[in-house]
Length: 92
Image (cartoon, rainbow, N blue to C red; front, side, top):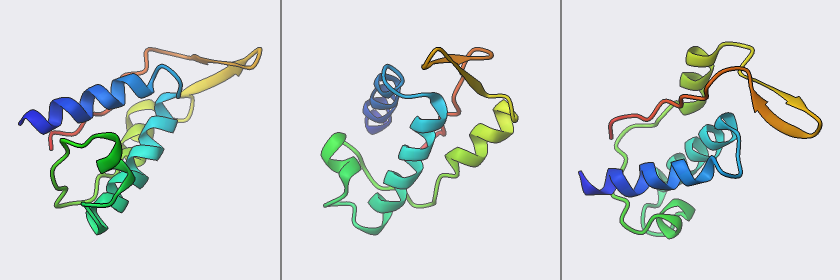
């Protein structure tokens, strides 16, 4: 689906300024908001091509399952990942 491409690209761009966990946390919150009011959600404003979500996406839980407890550490005020941050992108 074309809508997926726009959402995935948006999430990839978020990694320029956010950690993987921050991306998953915000996206999970925004998806829940979008499910309640798809026409006026923040996510719809950010990704206008977005369609509907019929089920909740537990992105934070998926992140913790895939990354464990040592997902990232901070060093000198900058985020560094203990391993390559491969986020879980759900097939919508």
